[in-house]
Structures are given as C-alpha cells and as structure tokens.
Length: 159
Image (cartoon, rainbow, N blue to C red; front, side, top):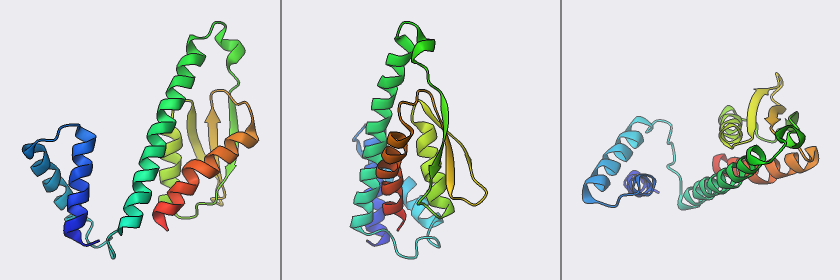
C-alpha cells in the first residue's frame, strides 16, 4: 500500500472514530493522516499492506469487544450485593511471547485500558508481564485468554 492509499485508509478511520461523515471531517481526517504519514515516513520503510491493515482492524475490534464485555462485568461486580464476597484480586505473571518493546508496550496498554485489569510491570528479562485483576476466577483461563486474544493479535500486527 502506498502512502496515498494509507492516507485514505487513515482518513476513513478518522471518520469512523469521530462518527461524522462530512466533507469537512474528511478533509480534517485526510490532513491529520497526511501529517502522520509525513512524520512517520522514515519509520514506514514499507507502508502496511492491506493484510496488515485488516490485522490492525481485527485488533481494534477485539479491543472494543473486550472493553464492552469487561465494562459490563465490572459493573455487575460493583453493583452486586456484598461486593467483598465477589472480589478476588490477584497479580498474575503472564508469560510473554511478544518480544519487541512495541509489542510489549501495546499489549500492556491494552490490558490496562480494559476494565478490571491493570498492567503493573514487565520482568527484567522481559519474559513476564505482571497483571493485576480485580476478580480472578482461574489463572490458567486468564493466561490462555490473554495469549489467544490480545497477545496473538498484537504479534500479528507487528510481524
């Protein structure tokens, strides 16, 4: 995908995020996209192909779905009678498959932005991400869900 196509995709992404399809919004989105592409031109040795754009979109959709499900789960937890009975806070050492700084940072941010979870730290050897959860039902399920969800999709976007 060349730079012009990337600007068009980003401009329509802008429209989707702002929620208003007007000519003025399209122009602003294209201007912002062009500025981003210009500023990132040295880092975009090969602008992302359509496959990578789809993988990015899939990651965004996964995040939105997880955000909604987690928000509903936390709301149910908070509104439940006898909150202390339902809370099972824990810190879990999540074994990382992601290796680069960008992959680990994006994964940690996605975890933190999801209600009920918080990335605390990355181990010195960068092999584990420490995650605090509000109510842990199963460590194995949490590790499996993070690995098959966010981490897998983050790695697909970057590799």
